[in-house]
Length: 121
Image (cartoon, rainbow, N blue to C red; front, side):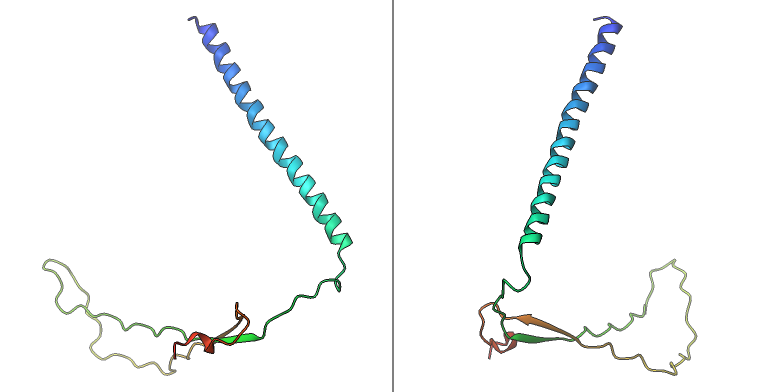
């Protein structure tokens, strides 16, 4: 096979790859335009008061943050490892750490009745 044939075959392969890729891009673009047109038409025909969904009573879920783990002090380092020792008199912070806030999330019950907040009792 001559060099000119290899070049021609390479160019034909690249062109075929670009044609197939371009077809996918055009198909995706056309599909997105059609979907956008359908969504716009659906928004224009729907009135805000025509649909009233029956909502369930909200359920309050209390989530407490996990406490911070204490720092680990190395008592016996491995041999040959240089360890910088902290000052033996620790400095107490002047202001205590503030307690993180409790997060309240309201989630409707899927069954529509009170399940006692997920408790087993």
